[in-house]
Length: 561
Ligand code: FES
Image 1 (cartoon, rainbow, N blue to C red):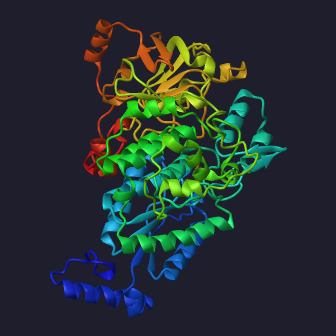
Image 2: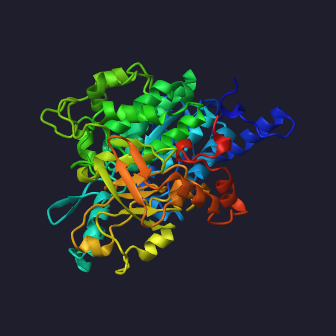
Image 3: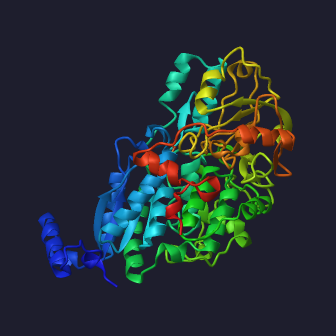
């Protein structure tokens, strides 16, 4: 097999000339023949002025390079797309597949024997894992790490669970304009990823659990010296992976995915992670069974006491022992023989986990945060392809609820009317939003966290049942049914719901049903027309033409194995 500079030569019809030319150009950077004969370790650089979650990427790259050179390799950093949640129009999910394509093709196009993937903000690690799975070049994930917590008037604050909670208080009139402006500067006090168990933290923990990141890589704060040491170690391990030819497909096996999904349930993680890891699995030809995922949830209690489901933040999880300590607690629920990029099995890593006396962030199985599953998969005539409810962040009194539907036909319609004082809505009603799916919005925005109508919020209503084909931020909370599949924009039953219909949610029975008789539904189906013309050019056309539904991980159909 070709290695180093000989890999993937540019095609000029004369391979020896291609190598001669490549070496001539790279020598312009001052490299010696000795350096160019070493294993080449690519470093995916996702630094961007638009991405504060990756604000430490430069320092991490320097440390990775040091680790690579100490292990006898040649580091080569290269840029890829970087995606930040708040700087991605229309939504970061719309761009995730573009980043996956970029990462895959840059790994394949450039001569690297292994790659270190520096990611962090929500969609970046999923995109990198998708790209690495398809390229199947030895790879190691290096998260940028979580932020430290913020403080306001003696209270600990975390992005972005507290962003939503306090904004809700501002909407309800219990927090004034000056206070919300002050809070705005305290919610994200350092660089790094959101420090609650949102999507970024969830996928980082799953990347560690599936074996693609080093122990501690998910939880070590972005600002700590240990984060830099993990970067150095990741560089050194990448050289070993290159020499041994350990590919992502050898790490991310069906058993490793089961481990990752078990950890997702045990951490009360983000609903988005199910979509992302379904996409990664699809790249390796590994099917994801939603019923198995739901069963894992019933068997595995939520053990991590982190916001938004619990009370603490990522740095507390880290000092309690992090993912290795959680893995030890889960024990037989996991396949501990799975290999990792650390060169150890998952069980060997768990055996070395730190024991922290008195910590209460990682609960024992005998004293969990919640039982019955962090995430529940719902089925029913409203979601024949499945829907997801984050039970651990929902209100117990709404887990079984029947109510009148108040329908919004799009995200824009919801934004326009939700606070209209004339909106006929009560706390017992069910808010339904159509047009928030992968094709409909497009990009399945995190708009499923439909705000409580201002009039009800001001009357003290904290939660209502809300249903959509959109996603929600992993940092959000409430009785919110998401990812209704198939989406309304492709003719799913969600698009047939009308204001006044009755809907029944039964989380224990895992049911979501529209209580309208079949003859009426058939008539509505016959009269249904697609909401908008498909885009014709550029990435929008590619996305609309090929994006799969949530049960396909919202990947492009042509990227699955
Ligand atoms: Fe980047 Fe939350 S905005 S992780």
